[in-house]
Length: 465
Image (tube, rainbow, N blue to C red; front, top):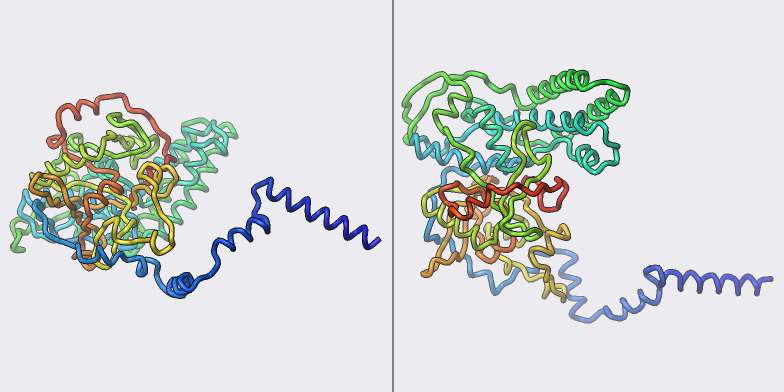
């Protein structure tokens, strides 16, 4: 009896072993081969001893590249005081408003540290995003919960990320105020707790709206309930960020901090006096390696304001984007710029160079994916927005490196700025907002195409944080 049991168990083990191999499992034989190929040597033991107790980046620093840092730029827009988004995902807002404040400072000779209120714009960003979500739930009420769009909405009811279209739509609709009129609060500087609570409440409200619809409630009833829901959202925002001013008195000062005038403003009258920007003259240009160049694309539901514009972009090769950026910088005009900032960033000096770290030599392998392959496999994408303000050109007018004004405070990186090689720029830059006058006429005509509509869950369209 025992012998039969032993034979049975042996056959069973053999069957399970063969079955594991056939189904792609990690069998003992395969594991043995893997281990055999990785027999410890004196070299691998030394590497393991070093790696287990240290930051990989510290060990992978490319010593041959450590002396090539150069902070000289042939063409540079004079940047002002560096801003700080603190622990928030509002880089898109800081970047957009840094572009705008540079214009205001130059036009009105304001102090270098002048800023527009990020808290004011953020309040309406969150209120508008809440409305966008709730209205989208009403619009998709007849679709099942497992519909891709409905699923995406509930996964992304609200957040503090965004892009330049949001800045344009919010400022056009609500105006703008100086930072000292509505300063930052703890929750605007540290958005995660507030954002999580808003998202939780909106998901609850989203289910409620769908239930009302399933029980026969018409659109009018849903809209009425939505307004009541937004009253709660408004209260939560007012308690955490503060209630936005509708009228205020403000004293303009010059570059030497001398008072020039004191006037009463509304946010819209302040916008018209100190900016009066035509946002229709700003265009989003992208290098999207997943899609055909010279086509216009629109991302569904990727907007900040329900009655605003979806994210729209023209897809172009990098060399054409670089040419527009150079033209803008030469004319002393900063640009909204976004990239995959975490890749090959030396956080000690703020230098971005694909040769900063030699991970291949450290691990005895290679990392050879192209830009397209990285985006396609979710390994790379635009993660952060900054203000492009400088380029260093060689004697033939070719870019060697670029510089951006960041929003992580003046103590980070190179005095608050990041410097990137042109090679890094080509590999990890994705978006640029360029004014119309710097775009060639033939390229501008391409913007008149009917956009190709893309879904918001595409790997290329994460919001900058």
